[in-house]
Length: 258
Image (cartoon, one colour):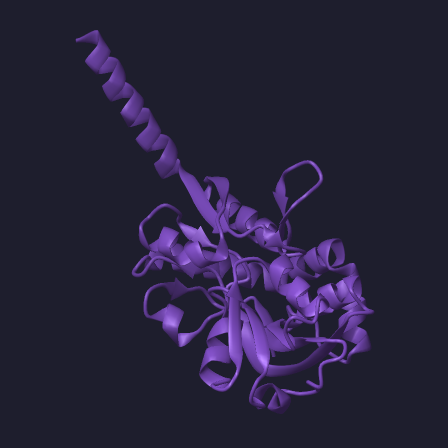
């Protein structure tokens, strides 16, 4: 009997621990928004946003590092409570999950191989183009919708996509502006950054369908962070070099939504 009581107590404690935690899913391979630092801790802009939401809810936050193409499934099955991972709003995703108000505005752009003849979005449409995309991203969906004559290669890691471009195995990679700038800066002799947006996008927090109470609280936190300068402070802390690059290209900072 004591054994069964002990097991029952253990399961009850586990359930309470899970219910009191705010479990946030993120793919921590995307600096400066989510990445693993030198101490092995998940950090970045999105991580700090998650911490602020946890504080507002009075709940301990646990971050789970999940590959990007598995985040929505984890949310829908209840393994996590939120997705905060540079997640773009699009119609396909909106059919299966809810979104908070936007907190980042960016655009899809092109990392082109140095010797590729690609100079613009129109050049991507030429027959025989080879395009690499990150699996499960809006770059993949845009490419499949708009580049019917291209050979599209879908890979599951940013670094793999970058190396396809660096090695000139493909003409280009389609991804967001910040990533394209950062990866070009790492490989300036082998790549070109074509930052004119193929399409503007906004990022938001992903929530399970129907959780209006949590959605309201998340939106309150995001609105407060916009009004009190928290996003500016996060940009100064995590995005110093990105701010310089975007200013040089005449681009607004990603937290400027208008």
